Length: 333
Ligand SMILES: NC(=O)c1ccc[n+]([C@@H]2O[C@H](COP(=O)([O-])OP(=O)(O)OC[C@H]3O[C@@H](n4cnc5c(N)ncnc54)[C@H](OP(=O)(O)O)[C@@H]3O)[C@@H](O)[C@H]2O)c1
Image 1: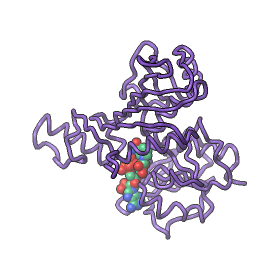
Image 2 (image 1 turned 120 degrees about the horizontal axis):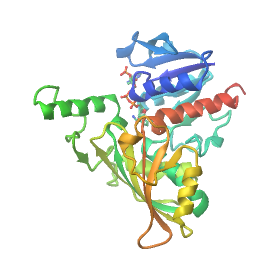
Image 3 (image 1 turned 30 degrees about the vertical axis):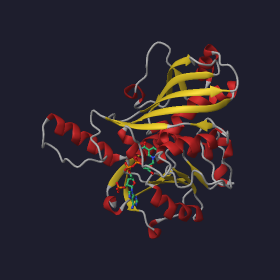
Image 4 (image 1 turned 90 degrees about the horizontal axis):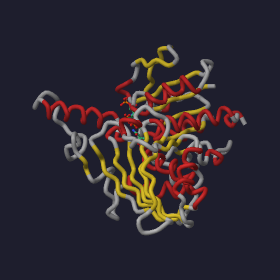
């Protein structure tokens, strides 16, 4: 088996490499791609030094699975080039997510939408992924009708340049002029909260907020789900947190809700402590806490969820999907 990692030098790509070392045996071969700037640099996979290739048509060779984390422009231009050479493409960008013919997959929820014909598979938005992991076991019992999610999104959700900017801002706050003062976001993010995550769209919501709305409906297969999202960017390096008020068709029993969450693989309920992004960083599970019944209705449940945006929000889910394709032999059908 041969796996291509596109965007191998990025925050997500580097996590993908580490996870691939664990999920696949050493017989699997890897090709690494990034921009021209990284061409020829060396990254190690399974203790083997691999040179990075520039992503261009000439360098694309046949492979079984291509894991894309190089931004939407590259996905649009090159995903089908890999498919034409026989690969399954698992794409971390938003390019294909809302395409009817392309499955939007959260491993653990709807990987059964993958088959030998679905050569492109979209990996959902990181905040949406953490939230639907918490919602799915609740929906299975109480039938979800609507959500009001409010997210607190970490800086690493915007990539390596944003993390560098956060660190430079922190240095400059401590010692003015000690680091470059170019800011990734328009407003200072270090020690701050910006009440906008993503880009504004015409309806007054950001694209990140619209992803919450569109993607959760598709993943959970609830076309009429009511979603009223608000997303903020916070001066945290990694770990997206979400407060969510969820309304169900049926009255909700809090104990049953907690039990269902604990039985769902990949989600963990914290009964005695309040998980933060710092707790979530480096962890594969989505942590849920503060489940409580609504003040105005027994059909409402309010809770907090937090997860590592680079893991279940991106790299881990992509590698879980790749491993599912391999284990079920879908790639060789
Ligand atoms: N960060 C998250 O939490 C998260 C979550 C879900 C989805 N995503 C998505 O995953 C993708 C990558 O995110 P990231 O956070 O890893 O970003 P990042 O840290 O900024 O890394 C971007 C990667 O893309 C590569 N790249 C940029 N321009 C390229 C070009 N012209 N040709 C080939 N490669 C190019 C970069 O290579 P160089 O190093 O050579 O520039 C780098 O490997 C994005 O589509 C993002 O929306 C991210």
